[in-house]
Length: 247
Image 1: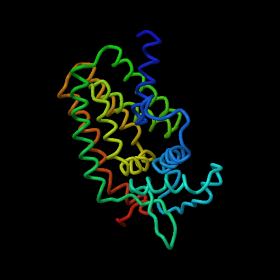
Image 2: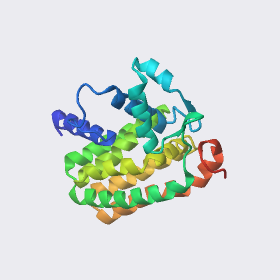
Image 3: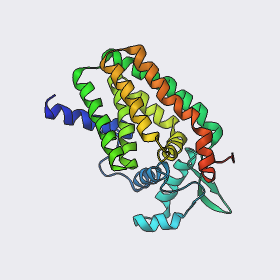
Image 4: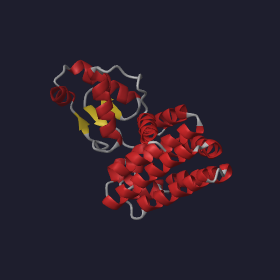
């Protein structure tokens, strides 16, 4: 594949994985949107842990803005269920709602089984090469013990499958559904053998896509995402303080 085509496709996949379009946001982003984006990333990556207090004043000071854009960002994150606002007590990072995880995973699984099947039917040689490149990044991140890069490449892989399927908008919808699943998934990565297992499961999805085996790709994706359902209880036992229900 020509280098220019590869770079163009890689850039497109990165935008899809991030849930943005080139024209989706003004070049000079508003303070509120910038704060929202940064805080959301910190929340989903567990840099800000469930139960942790959020200081509106400190965030305003950090960004050199008034409290108004900070409050706007916080309200939006509250609407997504990532922050909880208590008028007399303060603002806190929400704990992961155990009861909401199975439904979100089932919705995601149903949608991604479809994108995997369609990707196997439609994948071109250059698109397969792009998927192989993303999977190689995951292997490199695993070897380096870099869970953040591994997670980013994981997102890119799933976004790329939706793009190859011809329905990149499905990934954007999945991103809205899987907010709490993302935080839960971050907790599974340090578990012994988990990253290696994800790589093997992605390899199975890619092998089926390469073979244009639609049913095989659908089944491989089903198996891959089914493991998220199976790991909820174990992850909750390991990290009880992150969840809203005690095991």
